Length: 389
Picture 1 (cartoon, rainbow, N blue to C red):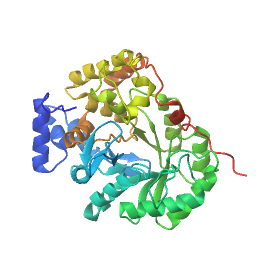
Picture 2: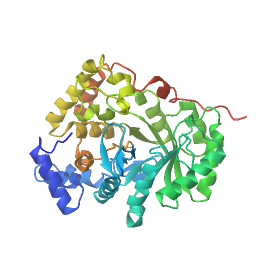
Picture 3: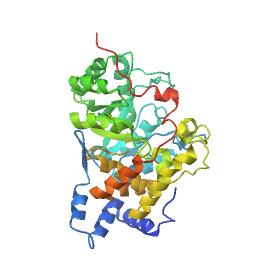
Picture 4: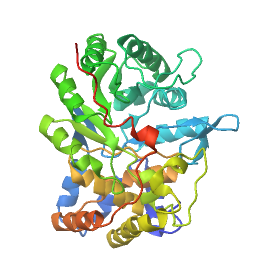
């Protein structure tokens, strides 16, 4: 999606922001102050939000990259590509325009995403940002070969973290997630291992990704969970049933992965879109040809509201997410600089209470057909850890 050519005002804003070396949302907010009420300045001052114990910009960057077929090539899960140097430059540009929350995992690549993030953020940028990464999908530390299944045994966690620190070129991981709950390892053993790494200064905070709700409570009793990361967007609102209320109860931050619905909410997919491997969407039921046309009702709603708000569909979708709770931080992924700047500018988009209620009601009225993930991937979500014996 290249919204710049279709939206001259957006193109000019991004160009001016790049020239001045500031985040586009700063110019956007400042441009409104002449006609907007004083609350525009207040929104600008309060852009940084609390994600559990962390203070970060509302829009982060997901770095979920893998080797491409060409030498030095880098691809994401959705057929977008760049080069290793292009990826490093993108990460540095993100940090320079105000993004200070970066999300990755050892299995992304494997290892490539952590390596590029570490190279990009070394030096002065490292102390300005929060780096989150994940363990749990086992990878041979010598060869980078995926070993299959999940592994959260204490000895593997310690081994994985040492490799992550080396690849990220840092002495500490700001936020370490268990990528998926291990049905063979009590969560008390997992948290106990992480607590030991915290005592050594190698990990500062920890989180859980797609966990069972009781596992969250058990983990939180051992040591406070900082953040939960689950899929959440206008395309999939399952987190609202149990996870978000639990986060609110326990004071846990929430990071929605796939905040743009794998591109669906960014206006890049049509009823006639077809996906083939290795594009991740090829195995996702909600993108199948027999249901995609019906699901386009939501994409059309997003486009309508984006026009109403004079923003892009991606910005509307990200702003909707961060408007749901003040402790939600989105991590859209991209390999494209213009899309990065577009996403960051979503932090300046706001909704009135009545307006947000109207949009929420409209989104809820549209049924989505097809499961959010393939059966084997879905089976790893919401898992409860075994009891501690």
